[in-house]
Length: 268
Image (cartoon, rainbow, N blue to C red; front, side, top):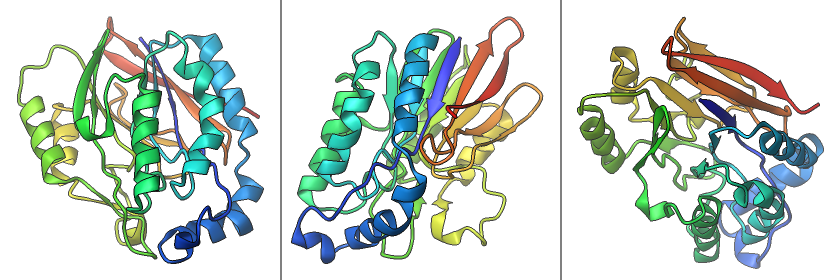
């Protein structure tokens, strides 16, 4: 079974209404205008989509941050690029990142919700999360860990509904590997150093990864790709940012050996 995993395109743009200067969006707009637009190149996402279409994986997984501030115009920039993938026969699983669910303004949350439904081809809506999907040789457990936070932090949270869902689902007998899909890394080597960017409430998920109730975590958020896996490929894979580093991942599960193997891809 072949899985393509990509994340963090961060399409951006100017403030789209005066209210953006009264909520957190001004932080993201400032960051995009003076830094991100010079290092995040949306053309790389186009190349990644072309590769995915040629590769024809069994599933494509996007772990969020399509946008920089969750504004409707930013989603509108990235949707035409993703449309060939969305319209293909390849199943797509998408969870929003903290930059997609950046503020609680209705026009922004409506755009995020519409994109989740659109990209998943109506298979699920944002409010259906957490949810489980069975594709061939693996099960995929999707949870939302992204919520608006204060001006200075990019925190994620495993809330009670996701926690209970994972505990209940993973208490069942397992017949195939279970893959967690979330925006935030679960395995954090430097929780104090990364306090402003970390996930809270993940300890029980770590325990499930350790004892085999969960097999693999797919995440984004961190723009440099990495994998923290054992000899059987169990652990966590961060695909990195497809537009910042041109990075994405090709993951293959071999049922005969019950192992995951990883290939780090680059569009440049």
